[in-house]
Amino acid sequence: YMLEEVMDYALENQPSVKASMMRSQVAEAQIRVNRGSFSPTFSFNFNMRSNYFSLAQTRVGETSPIYPTIGFVNTTGDEVISAVPVTTPIFEKTNFGEQLGNTFNQSVNFSVNVPIFSRWQKMTNLQKSKIQLEQSELDLESTQNSVRESVARAHADAEAASKTYTASQKNAKAQTNAYEFAQEKYNLGAINA
Image 1 (cartoon, rainbow, N blue to C red):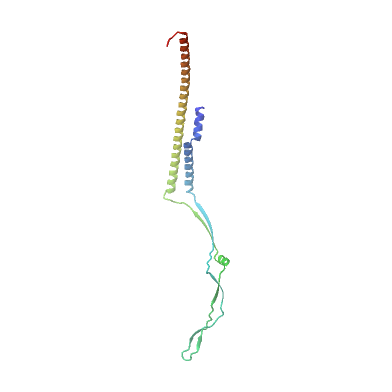
Image 2: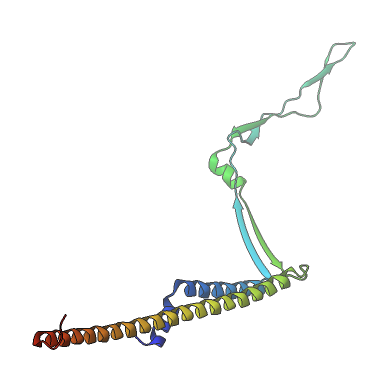
């Protein structure tokens, strides 16, 4: 593999790099959120409500008017009758559907909130989120550099190991050839053990 291919693959797939990228994206989103806090907000609410009470009663009429006795004359003992008629109301238990209809309420609420001054809190939050974005970008760059360094070191180590292996193979072959040559000389009597 070429070093650049390995480097690109590592930068695309290393979890620490991906995590740093995600932190940068979150910081960018936080800046948008904090900028949005300068905008007015609108809210709209609609409420519906009704009640039911098991002991509720509805007036359905009244009794016939009566003229009650309000007293007696002391000297004669005659009754004194009221000139104002008195009636007694008649109630019935209110049914469920009628109660719900009678107590049905609805309301609509629309509000606008325009931010004017928030003790510089919104501006401070925006500045903090910009600093956080810069910090996350620096962290990402540091993480990428660390991955590049690790990949380059591993690649160099692999190449060195490959060269050491090749050299060891050549050395082993040379040693084998020297042994075979010495063996042949020994067999011919040119050398002794």
